[in-house]
Image (tube, rainbow, N blue to C red):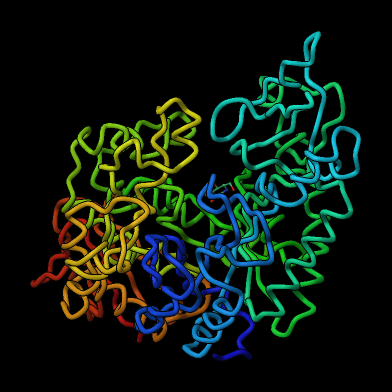
Length: 549
Ligand code: NOJ
């Protein structure tokens, strides 16, 4: 690994592994660290700069591992700390850095702090680490407020002694009290624990939610919703959260090279630079591309806005098309564009209706979706900044809609009376082979059912096929390394509202035809195309790269 390159994160390609669904070495149906280690050649050949591991910590899996019972250990079903060390060593030996997920807004209800808080009762110091309150109503049997959790239902849960605790996500994810010095100190220790084990960076879960102002009287949900997001909102994106990150920054900088961090912060655009600045976490996710339709105007606006934002923070921009929380982009792009409100936001998460219908309505054009996904990926990989990829997208995988309700795992499904089918469809274990138990995921089953069509997408099927999506990703990442340039682009006007063209400072050019009609390309040596074609016209739903120089 080139350890001297401390700015790798600025334009790195980070591949997200959802450990329970990547590869299963011990055949229990749940992916594990040894499984990931058994696929080092695959990861090496992909050509990524870093792997981001979603939580692998001990967890009761109430929220896919984002309910952490112990921040400084490995879930026994996934392995041991020794397995973790071996994995880090294996990745590093292939020049791949390691980013781990930190989940600081909430613990699991299985965490020893929460167990102690329950055991010690109201008024105890252990309760101070969480946000316990008395209930409303004569007997205190009403929740303290009408606040709604992000996963649906009340954000408060009553415990047997009558108090209520705040959980912004699942019931099993009690929110921590970030005014508590012990909580702050413990997370610093966690950051050091993993940094000392060689971890290169951290992905910070809901980074905008840690600090809260619960001064009585607590406002209603309607009041909360109407409050400006100006740094003083009681629950979200408070200015004082950056005091936490200033302390974390000192930890990051105490290592050589400094450890990196990327914020998952769902905040107003103007406030993203606060998280991305070098005084804070240093980089922030930008989910705009992931929320945009495959449409030239939207893509151009998103790119322009986010490059400006990145410049304002001094960080690099990040780009994401898929992750473990959304319908895969191959599927989104094969569905009709979602209805949008006047501010351009989708009325609901794209693809959820289709998932709810079991993959029937509206009809999915699998072919067009996959073709557009490849075009969007090549467009993204040529942008200045870092790209985050999600496991399985390099196989062109579609979302899995056909999961029987009895086998669903996502808490959003259970907390929304079945209205929101949740995120299981992008978390189905990967197909490595076209046949065999769990398509080569492991020797046993798969913890979420894999559909028969996974056979066509298996790694083994795509490995030696020069026109497969996997081959396209490999070639794109190889060329990206060769072509990489300063963090800047210039738009080249095409006189066609469906065709975007941009040029990086060294002459690397990218053209995407978002429309259906072929576009006369005219010039340039095509170094890579998202769809193979002959002739001088760029077909619809296609991106090409033109080599620099
Ligand atoms: C964001 C994570 O990406 C998501 O998967 C999780 O459910 C929530 N944070 C709560 O931790």
